[in-house]
Length: 218
Image (tube, rainbow, N blue to C red; front, top):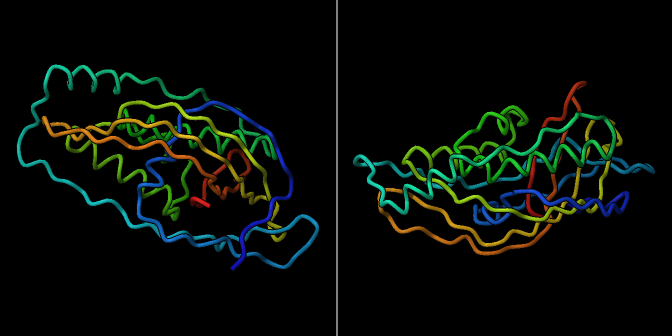
C-alpha cells in the first residue's frame, strides 16, 4: 500500500490543544490508506482502518485519596474550558477547521473526562476515536486526569476521495509539549514527553457536519 500524496499544500496554522503525544504513546500498527483508481483529484478510500492496541484498564481497589496538591491540580484540570465551536462548512478549509477542532478536544477529554463532543464527531467504527475515548474514560474511572496542554497544529494538505467527494483526508502536523498524567490516589504521576509529527485524519461530510472515520500517525 502506498501513502497518500498531497493534493495541495496549505500553510493553515492554528494553535490548539491536541493529544498527539498520547496518540504516539498508544501502541500502533500503521495501516496506510488504500488508494483507489487515479484521477486528477486523487483518492482516499473508505478502507482506511488503522489498528490500535488499547491501553490496559486499571481498576481502583479502594477509594482514592488525593494530596492537597493533587486535589488542586485535578480541580484545575476539571475546570478546563472546551475549545471554541466551529461552523460546519463543506469546503477544504471547512474540513481542516473541523479536523483541528476534533484534535483540540483531545486534551480537553483527558483533562475533564467529558467525552460528549469527541463521541459526537466520531464514526462508530473509528478505532482511532474509540481507543482514545476509552483510554480517557479509563483514566477518569480511577479518578485520574491529565493536566491540560497546548499544542501547535499546522494543516499540511488535503485530499478528496475520487470515488466519493464527501470523503476527505487531512494531513496535519502536531507539535506537542510535554505534559503530566496523574493516575490519582497518591500514585506517582508520569510525564508524557514532547513529540512532533504528522497525522492523517479521514473524515466524511454527512450533509450537515463532519464525521471522523479514522486517524493515524503518518
